[in-house]
Image (cartoon, rainbow, N blue to C red; front, side, top):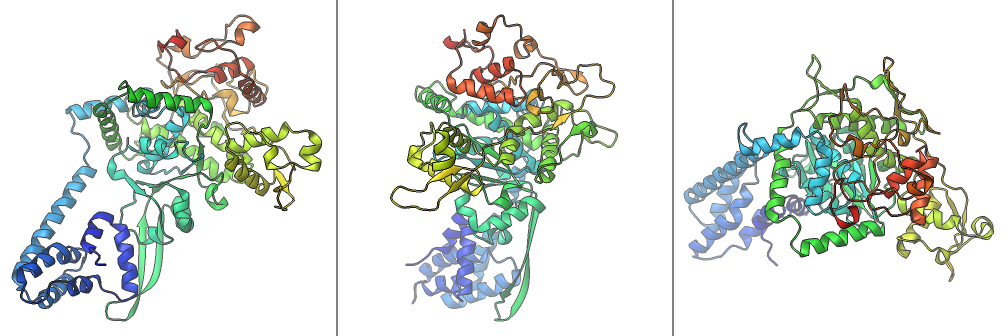
Length: 611
């Protein structure tokens, strides 16, 4: 079957280069293949059309002008055509290609002009005091509901490629949980020239790529499609660039060494159904675990029905939202960020991976401050000064990710361990149990099987290794330990405020200082714990909703406390367990109830449940 190489180049880009690379290794010349299939005899018109439509586009890929001219002579001789019209047609194609490249460059630098409506709207985004919360709200308008913290963290990771401090994420969830939809939505806010989307990568694809990855987001839709490239991804994440030297055959039959270089920094976005990445890759990323609860599923179904009824944002409105964010991100300028209070940040010395996690946490603070560059002060050297609020925002977003990484436990693994704890002790620790004996809510049987395997690999369970007709028998070797991150910000020596962590059983736990609401309001109303200062850098927060969002806790008797929420409902048994866990981690019980009971509705919502 004849292969149309011109179309392959035009439509598939990098894939076509790999195809031609394999052909070259087998000494098959794509150009000669096309010429061999050109019309023979006296059909000059047919030969010229083949040359213009199928052969000349291949010559455009030759960067050396001498090689291009020599190949043109070969084409003319093979097809028995005059070289002059071929050269004229090739020159026209080159001119068109250069014009297209210039247009792409203009689009890449297409920041809106000051004074234009686009510039005005972009600046409204960048000067919004609750910029990150606005991003989450706008992503909801684009169709992504819930996952408030995940949306904010996804945007921070994405824009970090442009800031020069790339923050690498990995997104874990079961099939159909919405991993790719989260990233499709978040990345739609970025300028298209920043995003490189791939379904998979070969082992050396990143070494040989012709795509500009500097300051870009490389979106790999599924880890399974890039397992051969784990090493190159790991190096790019750590070093921000790649260098690869290979010995290749030259056209004259000789051999020479060729150095391939790929410049970053690049944010590599990966999604996977696996519970854990390769251990070497896992320490380089912030894992993002999606909400797989029935409540989130209900929200998604409700959003689908709302869209079907025509009540959701229309395509024109969604395009305006995306345009404003893309313009806003284009207006962000490169700048260094200084953290004036860095000497007051307390970070523990264990576990060992804290050596990388500490730098990533600081980078999240820097990226948040950089994103707010139009609202932050600068020092004499022009560096953006991060506020204390930037630190608390960063810690609130990544603390859950760090806790799970340090425990090596995913949400599904926690649920399976909880189901194991409900088994009789003799069955749990002595006689052992089978997979079929576990009833795990919201975790599929297939996922339970994978979780039991990963828990065995990480040392939580022991397996007898006997598959047999009844399956493996497992015993619980160790249970999950309570993790206190021990990361917090010491009060300033001259501060007259009450220390932020006073009054809590575990004041060193960041959850006692600042915790995002798990199913938080979509308007960004993060709950502050009692004792939080409410300061944004050196300025008091100007917020008309201070009493609503930072309640003092005057809530009446114990019976009333059990009903704290926008809709007045009581705790379910599952929510009660979450409250207990938050209290063990250091949160005051009153605020733990508020956090768990918080609905997905924004403050001021006028729906029937919130009136």
